[in-house]
Length: 202
Length: 202
Image 1 (spheres, rainbow over the protein chains, first blue to last red):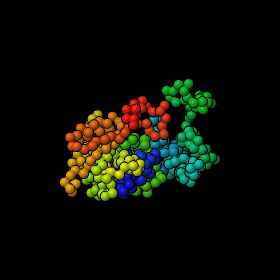
Image 2 (tube, each protein chain N blue to C red; image 1 turned 90 degrees about the vertical axis):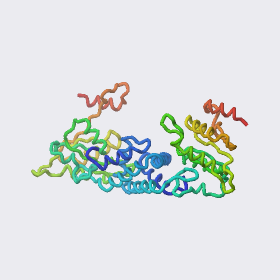
Image 3 (cartoon, one colour; image 1 turned 60 degrees about the vertical axis):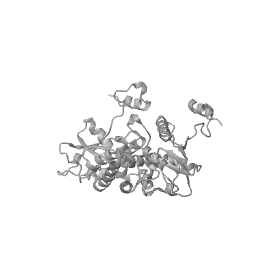
């Protein structure tokens, strides 16, 4: 699409989206300009609005438009429990279970030395400050940190680094249980998962 | 990501992009807000700029910021040849071959009755007007229409409808040759293609 400056700029701008190559970006630009210019305008406004309005919760580090997000402001939640997740999507998944009533801390990433992501690039320091924060009675609020980072190499590394950083504080540090997924047949479950399920049997 | 209004709006707005579901949209929003807010602002501006500036070439119907696109304005091109393609990306592919010096007409779509796309929804009427347009000498300029719609059911239907509409005008109507792709081994070429290559042998 040479010689079309505004179009070329749009295609390049769309390529910053994760998973979008030049072909997809061209298809997206074509779709928006040919079939849905109103949607393109809405997307433009939504991007600008989000960039200007969305910041990080002072308490749990997730995206929010307020200083403290609605979850952290909710007084019905158990403030002694702090569940550490990688992303807001992971927090969502835990919330949807309805099985957790404590608070969260969202790292907004995971340690990934190969990609140059170290402890300073994700919210690990902020997590330690959060754990050390004092309640009005002068005691630390958090009694248990539940590590719910993903069960990938990077998620495990992140969990390990957090465990090391939080030891000697007298706080319980737990990890989500590994085991056989609900509804699955043993024959098709990978061996590492079965081994963990054996060790963690109850 | 409940309770985050600006974020929720952004995720919904991203879902209008072709091939983007809710998971991809959430990943895109997370990436932009966490890692590249400058890119989000650039994308917002590029969308608005393109919507406001990009229109259709009066001559060939492709996207352009001018009344007549640079290709149609190019006086070195052979104005007797008109190659009909579905999209600007198809035009690009033909241009990159360097083997074609005529003009183009871009339908900006294909006939697709199952999706409710009829002749009025794509540039077929504009194509007929273009073919009938008179040059300064009072003669029609176009001597040959080359149908380069895709070799899919919809592309073939589109080519057929155009052929019917243009007959009795004394214009040569041709179709891109079907045959065995360059560099391919017969063993792995589909039978329909081999059959066409046999019929069209030269």
